[in-house]
Length: 133
Image (tube, rainbow, N blue to C red; front, side, top):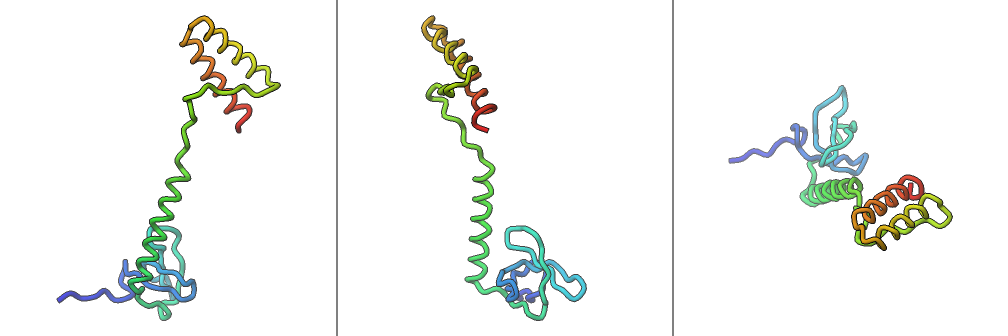
């Protein structure tokens, strides 16, 4: 026979009607119950007498929300690599861009692929630092 944890056992998922959120019961702090969002985050205080066990639907919703939050956070931290399949374009009116573009064209005309690549790298770096932010 398995025993169900009491609603205020550490780790139990409970519903807080004041915030309308499901939280993981952590402990008591004075007259308050300390709850943590499912999946982690900042704890909040709740009235222990108002808490009730979370329903299966509330547990599922809280778990999905936590998974979505993790996915959003992971996407936000991923930088999209620059498209290097095409040469960068110089910014009109920028002397540095135009000089690097001229170096690239000379290198291409001379068949110097290494110098052409170097000019592309320098032009990309210059654009990123001076024009794109």
